[in-house]
Every structure is written in structure tokens, then in C-alpha cells.
Amino acid sequence: MYIYTKTTEDISIFEDIMEIIHKKDSDICVSVEHMRSFQELEKIKNEMTNDDILIIGSLKSLGINEKDIANSLKYFIENGKCLVISNIESTYKYGVSQPMNKAILSTILDSVLLNNKNIIELPRNRKNNSGRNKIDFPNNWEELYENWENNNISSKEFLDKSGLKKATFYNMITEYKEILKANEAFVKKYRLG
Image (cartoon, rainbow, N blue to C red; front, side, top):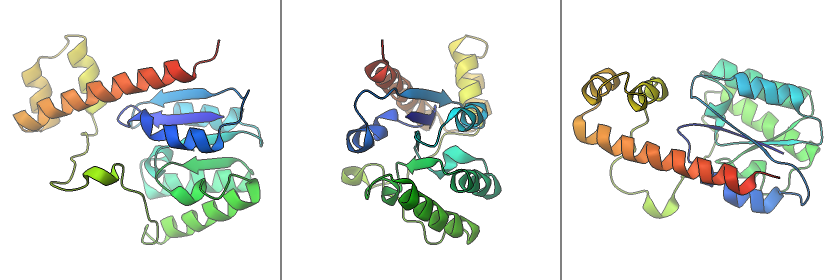
């Protein structure tokens, strides 16, 4: 079993899915990668057998644009490899057998090709979906954060390059640190040996 997530995703979203589909005595490989990088994903796709399952957070984990996402979905469909998408419940709710998974992925692919109009994604936190819309991390966030953590750039430079307002910037720093901490705890929890 493989879990593939981006550094900006809260890895705890996989907990419920793990309880549903995790097979006892099976190894779990967790890969965390920057938002615009897909080398780990390609490595996983090459290593996976037809008995393995790949769990991702959202369709955005498969590519930067719709073409990349569609190509990745086609790969899983054509090669008979099982893909579970945490915010699309139908990919795991009814089981993860290959024929069922292939049919669901085909439906998702059709929706992607029709501009995502039919895909119903679950809200991340159903209890707290009021108020302002959540602002996504800027595209260059991971690189800027890493440079800031290593004292290569100042907070002011980070703020200027990210294009965020001061309060939003510091709220995102706090949120990102919490995500990294949760990701680290999740990896430790499921690390074997």
C-alpha cells in the first residue's frame, strides 16, 4: 500500500481510509512531495504491483493541469492499478476491488475530460465549512518556506515574494507548520520496523 501526499496537505485525511482498506501485515510506503513535483508519484507508479493500492489526497496530486491528471488516471485504468482518492468517497466506500476501482476511475476521467463538472468532492472538514473561503498556499510556497527556514531569506522577503498580506502570511506559516508536524507524526505512526 502506498500513500502519496503533497507537503501542503494534512496527512491525517488518510486516517479514515486506512481504517477501511488497510490490510493487516501489509507494508505501507508514505511519500511526501512538493506541490509541483511528481517524481515520487512516477516512482510509485513504476514500483506498484496490481495488488497494491495508491492513496492520494485529491486529483491535484496527479498533476498540475487537467491533461496531466487525465493521463495519470488513464495510466491507472489501463494498467489495472488501484487508486484511492481521499476526497472522492466513491473510490473507496464500496471497496477497492480492481473492476470496481477501474469503473469509478473511468467515470472520474470522463468528468475530468468534461471540465470536472460532475465530480463531487467531500469538504475537508464538514464541521467547519463556514466563514471565508480558505486561501490556497501560493505555488512557490514550499521553496520560499524552505529558504526562510534555512535563513536564506528574511520574513519580509518571504512575505513580498509570496504576495500575501501580513496576517494571512503568519496564519499560513502556523498552518503549514501544523501540517508538517501532522505529516511527520503520521509517517512515524505507520513506519514499520
